Image 1 (cartoon, rainbow, N blue to C red):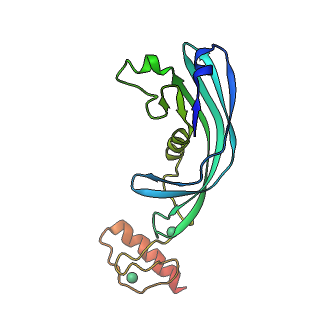
Image 2: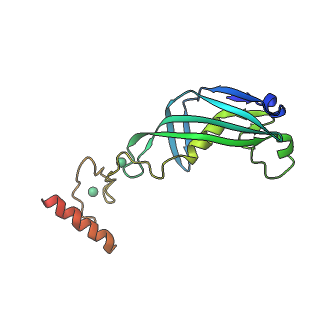
Image 3: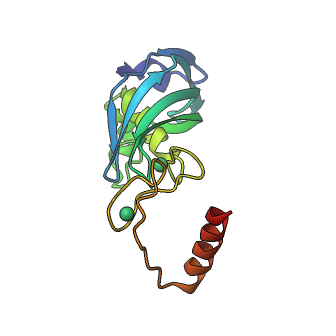
Length: 174
Ligand SMILES: [Zn+2]
Ligand SMILES: [Zn+2]
């Protein structure tokens, strides 16, 4: 979705509401793909704050689907965030080599999808897990340890890990 910001970029004090209906698609970030399953429509408020600058503000929420970082099964999670981004009239920005608007602004056209996707990337959880205590995959046979105990002898050379494994084994014997 491209939105022409000419009006608000050139009129000091001007405020406009942009109705955003985010596209439901697939986004990729650092080798991982996430499907936007649900995206709530929201209002993006563009305010001319003077000096050819516009502040964009809004609250967005997405239901995403992606692979669990440990067991690789598909899992869904919500990402909600507050957008607060200042952009500058491109005529000024284009002259400098550090055009901070380049990702979202072409001429006076704001690329709202890119703006949203960049915000999603910044707000992704550190780890995507299907559940907090996901046991992951067996390093030997690749079995999903949430579904079954494959019985592999997984030798763990790190003594700290070995201690954790002892606790785990002791629990299992109870
Ligand atoms: Zn998992
Ligand atoms: Zn195994």
